[in-house]
Image (cartoon, rainbow, N blue to C red):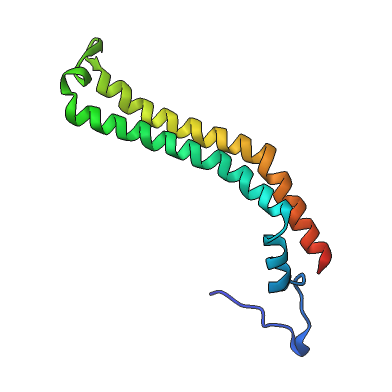
Length: 121
């Protein structure tokens, strides 16, 4: 049985003050936010496009180059299996690479914007 704490009476706020819509718009139009957005897009878009091309190459080769994909590499392991497993590997590598990039480049800029907004309230 869950118990809920009733809200305080008299309109007293217990949480931190929230920025206004105007403050959000001001930050969104700032050069600092534009730089953060450019840093994200310059990383995410090319990497996403590259991965989609890599995936579509795998699909197209699987459909139209069966002889090549059936080429044995070692024992019963063929090119199709190697490419398929490489899809998983590249997915994890991209996630790891993005995590490092975000920690080094995006998070400090986002934290600076957040702290400035919280200080203005």
